[in-house]
Image (cartoon, rainbow, N blue to C red):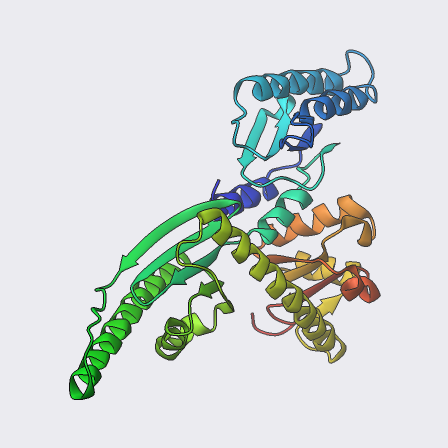
Amino acid sequence: MTDTLLLQELDRLAKLEPCYPLLSLYLNTEVDSNGHHTHGVFERKALNEILKEYPERSPERESLEDDAGRVARYLAEELSPSTRGLAIFACRRCDIFEAIQLNVPFERDVAAVGDRPQLYPLARLYDQHRRCAALVTDTNTARIFVFGAGETEQYVEVHGAKAKHFKAGGWSQARLQRRADNEHLQHVKQVLAHLDALMTSENIERLVIAGDEVVVPLLKEQMPIRLRERLIDVIRLDIRASEADVRAATIAAVQRHDQDRDRRLVEDVVGTSLAGGRAVVGIENTRKALRDGQVDTLLIAAAAEHVPGHEATADELIAAARQTAAGVRFIEDPALLQPVGGVAARLRFLTGSNP
């Protein structure tokens, strides 16, 4: 599932009407160190423990028993071998059964019952794997990747005219060098035109480039401002690097960038809040701002245990954010948001001001 489709699913789930008992199930479907799948064992044990909490022949138990049977059939018949993370939301009483198969795993298996979907693990996975473009290029060939939610969503190759090399001296050598430089420049311009069109049309916010000492200065010199603002790192990578190596290097660059982004974002929001500007901190202030539709971006601790009320509060805030088209950013370092209770928000407007 692509990054865009995952966000659409997240938003749709956030807008579901309350329904009980709604089962939320997150499974890591990777094989363990012994080459075995363990998600089936967790699923059976967790659902059996949940069923014990409801009286025999009660409407809630009968609904959950039907859901457990449907989950078991889905795992046996419809789970793709390439899937590494699976989220299922089910409630027979409300005629809900949603399954989301992903190429990236969830950090842990979860089974929970409530009147709304538990969205915390899904929203965090989306934030960790938001789309990023990667450009790997030399002076003749360019490879453009778009990675998101564990998938290569797009791949483009751009080839320029190869520069011909001759043994010559004096004026001839200078003329041939100018020709080669012009070909390099035209190649760079062509590559940047493809990249700019792709990132603009797809609204991709982050870019990593990899190139040698010849092409990188040309790229930076010719890069339009809108691309330069989205460039998060320049790395070294062979033009022939495998797709897996490009993805791994891109993810590592994104993680380094996000660590710095988290720190700067929290400092800005907390400082703005203290100055009485468009930001709030703490559970109650953030909850009220979400209820009033003021929130532009919700900041929340990446580990739910650092949020008062844990998963229940986190799910409530995330659902409220997505219902009002607010962004959600998970802050990996718990120390950053710990002084303000694990939650803060940047606002669109202050109460009484024009949105």
